[in-house]
Length: 97
Image (cartoon, rainbow, N blue to C red):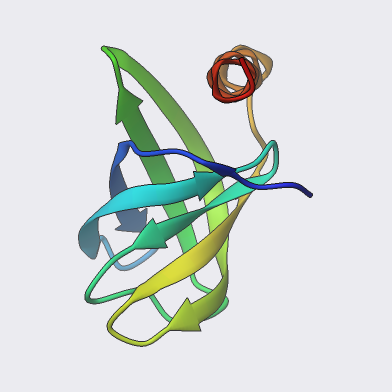
């Protein structure tokens, strides 16, 4: 999946742990994103993710695919509701114009 440069504020909440991590996206695709975070979740962690940009908020379940310690993590979106996928698609369309 092709990733596009994309900056948005992010809030991540660990499923079952309620650990919260604030982060910022650096890249976005139709299926996931890369997040810069000093204290990333461990690989495989299940999370709730919220991305906020220009007054719009994307929310989804997700899972951490890979981690770069003290730098960031790659996240895949899971069980994305259709209206949330539409928002994601609109953000991606703007990165290509």
